[in-house]
Image 1 (cartoon, rainbow, N blue to C red):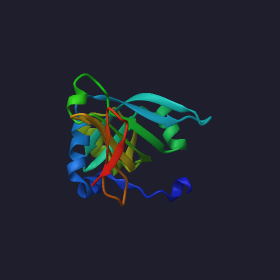
Image 2 (image 1 turned 120 degrees about the horizontal axis):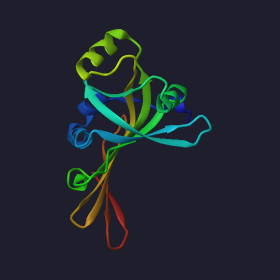
Image 3 (image 1 turned 45 degrees about the horizontal axis):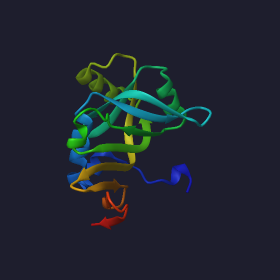
Image 4 (image 1 turned 60 degrees about the horizontal axis):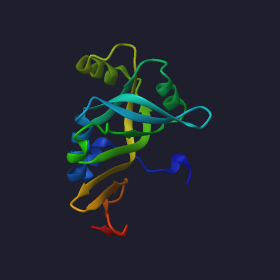
Amino acid sequence: MAVHDVHMTSWAEFEKAEPEFATPVRERFGMYKHHVLGTVRRDGSPRLSGLEVDFRFEQMWLGMMPGSLKARDLLRDPRFSIFANPGEGAELAHGDVRVSGRAVEVVDDVVKGPYAAETGAPVPFHLFRVELDEVSGVGVEGEEIVLRVWRPGARVRTIRRGNDDGSAREVG
């Protein structure tokens, strides 16, 4: 499947489709200000960068300084993955979460103006709207590791893995 054939969806569509999963994912990103963004460098190798994630106007947004390496990466290849800051105590509140998809640059001042006014973003700046192709979370429940994965057009898959024997089972 070619990169452009992947079905994408907005944060608002994800929240509407899977509110019981979207809420803890959003809360998990809200626990800390800084997260880890993975982008693709010009030579195809991965780049990890610190990044703030913002939820506003029913969307997930990525704002960046003009000309930053991560912005240049996304302008050239919009694929990304963001891992929520795994800071202290996070494992007790929703485990680890990651979102992946495409970053769509927004250049329309009708959107950027209100965004900058509400957030205090320094102008000029790059603003990217997140289009999701996967949301995942992993945590520990009792004696099991629980993985939840959502993709557009599908329900959340839940996989439970026992700590002792390594067996896994899909539920729901």
